[in-house]
Length: 483
Image 1 (tube, helix red, strand yellow):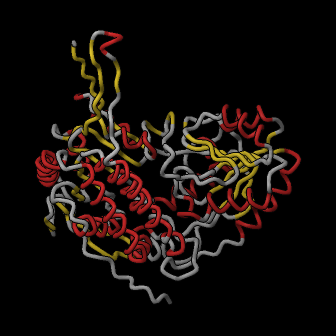
Image 2 (image 1 turned 180 degrees about the vertical axis):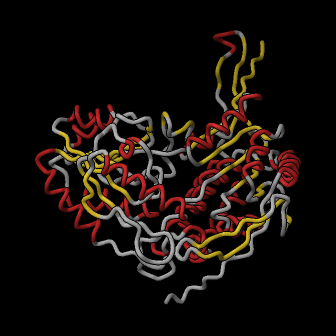
């Protein structure tokens, strides 16, 4: 038995510095994925609370946008320090939110603090540029980068803390205010995050966090005082968000799913490549991540060896209680996820795939699925083309660089791609041909704050991270003066 306290915090609707115990959207019974039992009742916002939150955020924006950049920097740096100081509690809440084991969840607060500090550093470095000089054009031209106003933030359930950190600090550094609708499946991290926002001294109304109904999300996107939307989730919801944005031509950042390929060439460090590809796809978040390399492409001459290594690693993964120290593999989010994942594996078998290991629900309480590896997968099949969002890894064989690129690019997604080789020239040549927002070579960090993250196609629009991530929250205006 774990010594970690399994009691979740009380969740509120956090609007303009106030804690509301109830909302007009009713309540949601939060289920702990490791047991399948209800562990909290979550208040839900509806249109009434959304309108209040947006109105208060707009009022706060009128002051926040004029706050000296150095002061915004100081407040965000203090928030980063508080996130880091509360790392242990965030890890505990991560386990209670969605079943992420403590050993995995422990990394999220440190990464969230890093993202917050990075964008704190940008707050006083937002500049325009000179576009025309009197001696050349007879006029002076320059640009100014200004905040939008109220930004709507809608996040999904697989990484609630890091999703908050990838969006809120950049928006605030740029001078915007935010209204956040987290998933009701994972409300606990947002509650603590909001506590720390207030402890950091960030003014009331600048950040508002409130779980809500689907109707609340639609109200938030379509609210006339919301000037931009940023969303992390799936393509189906993203389509509805774009429809909600369309009447006002409201811009949106969409960080969606992926079907990322990892290409393993024969000259790769096979120990590192197999560990990375298998653990990253099966263990971390139990495979519930958008950028994970869930398609492993293996060069012919080492295919059999890699298959055996991957099978051995997958079968060594031991499930356990997320609150137990040392456990790294936990449950998936809910019963629907179990049914979807197992169903996709069964259909893959019908379409000719071979289950190398796994493929079934584990016989224990909660929502556990065996780490699963498939071979003989048709690149055009459902499981090769659609995001599983669970602990399932598909293996493919290739003979030439061109064939590897063709298989990797044969998907409507384009979020991440991965290459394993000791030949840097080959890596750079292949990377240039991969149709993905980022290519990671030889186990480089897949989520680096100084590097823009975001995909193409079904993987979304816009970027998070780096200077590009900051400028998603700024409108560039041009000024011309006749001299």
